[in-house]
Image (cartoon, rainbow, N blue to C red; front, side, top):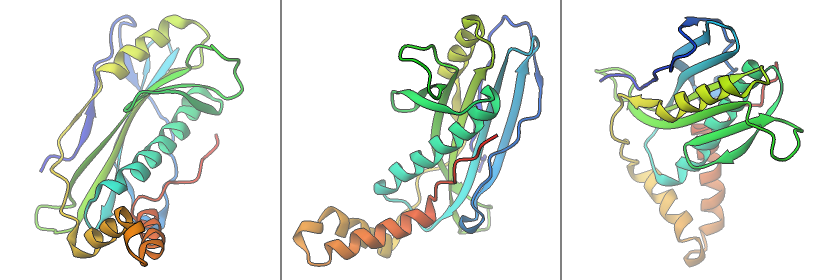
Length: 216
């Protein structure tokens, strides 16, 4: 299986991009998460920087209620990475599903975005001979410290064209996970509903734990 990765094509101008160093956000150790890919580049003029990364986390299976916490986790990673690029805390000012616009926290309404991002979810096995399933939460961020809008237009274009390659179909949830998901959807029809919600919240918190917000 080809591990999920993000592909992107920087537009021109600027004439070229070069590899750069951007610190990876910290990941919670208890969840077994680790970066499976990490690419950081900056424009030749140094005005803007992009990062594409994927985080692999073991999961017992997949049910749709897990999607929301997985996306929230990815958004947390995006914000932490964007802060390193922009050199200031950022907030989401536009969320159209997988595409995000980020602005420096505390900026007046209508302020132009400081960074653009995309987020993806993919699945795969940890190894060809291993039955351990993994979710890959992948994201792309491009931003700038510069006030000039021109480089940010380039970032928006790259983010719009970023794609996820590789991966597999979601793994089957198994009996336990399927039962918990069913109880949540039918909580009003069973006295176990309240307990099921608590159990699911605990399970999803472990499987798709969102990392603490990291500051620069």
